[in-house]
Amino acid sequence: MEELLKIPTFPTLRAFMLDNVPEVFDIETFYVHMKKNMTTSFDLDFDESISDEYNERLLEITDEIITTKEFVYKPAFIFFRGLDYERLLKLHDLFCPGLELD
Image (cartoon, rainbow, N blue to C red):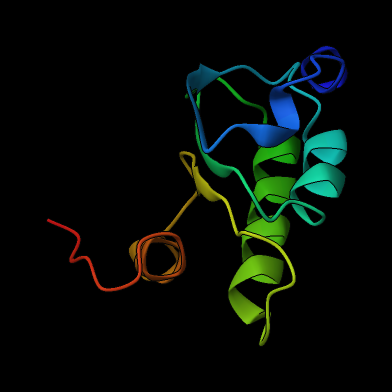
């Protein structure tokens, strides 16, 4: 994530999607950046092999996003193996308001 932030045009991207994101992805740096981001729509799909600890942190971040009442940033869509259907729907509604999930 720190390398991505070094790219001069990275903060101006309209959309950014990563699939099979490994555990080495610095989720803490990403989360700090995301909470300041008003431009980029982030869609991260994490690899099945992430550890239980990493999975737990993703659940915490997801819960923080879902319980936010008023956003001063663009919430990310984060998908990972520990994400239950209720959280998935809530994240989807925040990420794509008005669009139904098939």
